Image 1 (cartoon, rainbow, N blue to C red):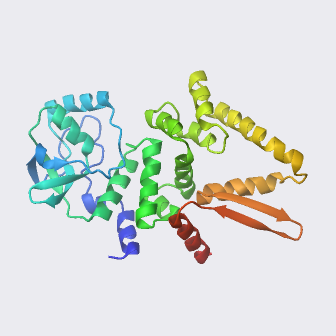
Image 2 (cartoon, rainbow, N blue to C red):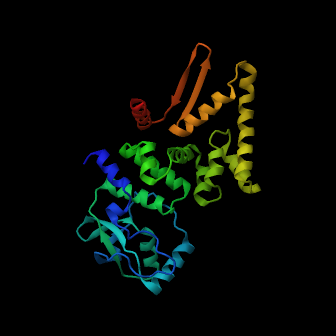
Image 3 (cartoon, rainbow, N blue to C red):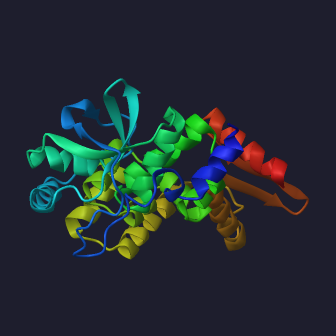
Length: 293
């Protein structure tokens, strides 16, 4: 199967491959919407190590377990066969975990025979569409699809129903140091707070200030801008020429669109555009965009 065909198929949404069984039910609805293929002993099912979702709130799992004890598992877990009588979860790890807490010995499943690539794609898209990922998990999922399967930011935007700038802004979070990533994963910082810190001199220190003072995103942006201006002061003293506001705005726009650092050096006789990349996959994505232009 070609890459383009796979992406178009995935772009039709989860219903094209796993049906409507894994969408949230209306409030109060406990009727099963899709019949399972079979019930499987819970110990024969394993989570996927490639599932982008890493954090599961314990109190929410306990609440779901209580609901499962009362109503059963309304929506089957979607799995694939990895060896005879052994299965790996594609969608529904949260229900699988809660069923174990509820003391269930078997759960209803729907079996889909898909390869590693499609299983990863479905896991990422399913979690994003259900808003089950924290911002860092979402960014790591996008990065995984780009690095392993050659997706561009535009491809991902079309598949998940988000703008390319949303994907680019998500990927920018991966430039942050681990302490800030931890705060983001734990929910201490929002994605808006974290994005403001990407270009600062001390993201970890500023993040601690934001959390300790309970700053809003707008306050965090002002704090970050003050830090960035402080970094640029020595350069402005030693380099007489400064960039005008239009050039700076264009740099920011291109950086957000590509998800890569873009610098423009413009002079009366011409200029240069510099795009910085870290991996060959990022270089390849830029080359594809230029070929389409």
